[in-house]
Image (cartoon, rainbow, N blue to C red; front, side):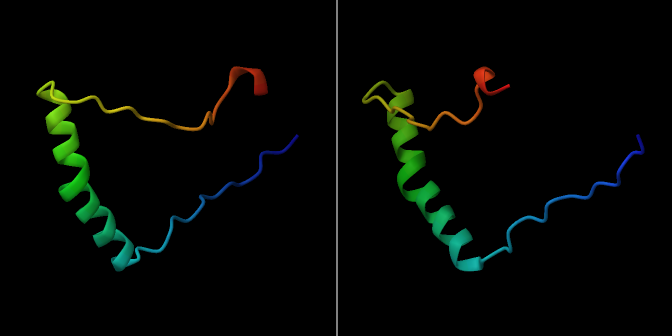
Length: 57
């Protein structure tokens, strides 16, 4: 069996509007929430979809 040449998947195009929107969210909303959680004033929960599973393999 011969080896095949593989490439890379190109990343998304750097949309300036989306990047600035993410930065303002991080600076204005996320960082104050995390700071108050570290101070013990409130709790922050992260909810994510299950992406990788050992049952798939």
